[in-house]
Amino acid sequence: MNKVRVAVVSLACVATFGLAGCSSSPTNQQIGTGVGAVAGGVVGDAVFGNTLGTVGGAAAGAVIGNQIGKDRDDRRRY
Image (cartoon, rainbow, N blue to C red; front, top):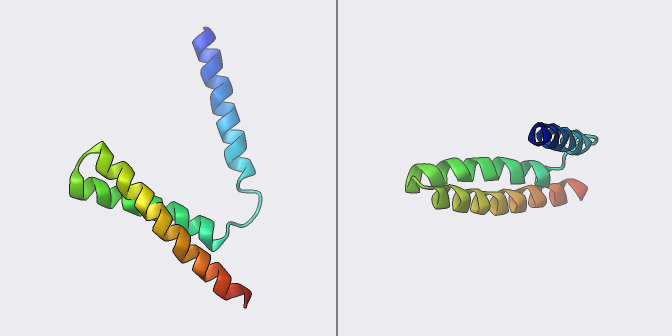
């Protein structure tokens, strides 16, 4: 019973934080980071076929997507 209660409270906290993050429109940098992480993880898994490849691909994709999104945000301001 105690484990179930901890799981429910944890899920409620994660859902709350997730919804709070959506309270404003995301920037191109945030979108680029998310899309890059997903795409990098998929490519890393396809190329290497193991957990390390998936995590490494996701990390590399997140960094690249972040920088591309940041560049687009900077261009929009000027």
